[in-house]
Figure 1 (cartoon, one colour):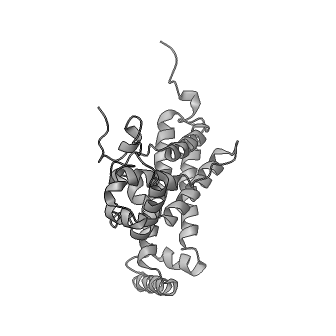
Figure 2 (cartoon, helix red, strand yellow):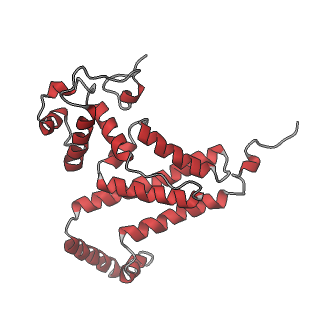
Figure 3 (cartoon, helix red, strand yellow):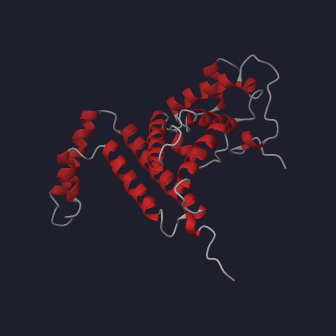
Length: 249
């Protein structure tokens, strides 16, 4: 049974793909324009009509190259995932995972609509699969068993996606650095005035005084905490030594 035209991921699952009948446009031009439109308007502001206007083409002409909006979203998402560079060969697992996580954050901040899509559709495009293969291979090289590799991938991607989604929303809402700094200062002061009721939250005021509350610093520290947890599994219960379970009858 073939994948439906309005189904997320369907563009990757339909046998033979959708071949255009004429070359007035190209799929590449459509995808490039779609990325630009998504960067400008986000997913809520995306439509085939707006995409056609950006291309100065008729809306129906787009359907010679794609089956619909879902195809375009899948193709645009895979295009920007192609911006993730591979790590150098023989890079240690932690350095490889750290680099890919940091690059993923940069790509998602450059294209703030990406977090809204990566968690809601199958990532089956060639760039997505290549990036996923590299990520899984780096963690599989640790010797962890399959269940822990899968869980480790979920832990890292969940951390990165969630962090960047919150960061992107905050940056979109607070574009003026001076106004943002003033807001943060008032937040810390509000908490400081209530230190008796919320003594543990005082750490944020202390971190702010040290200049350690910026997104970059907190992202790196949080990622290290996640990776420390993965490292603790290596050589222990999650190692390849127990991959096949106990021997004997």
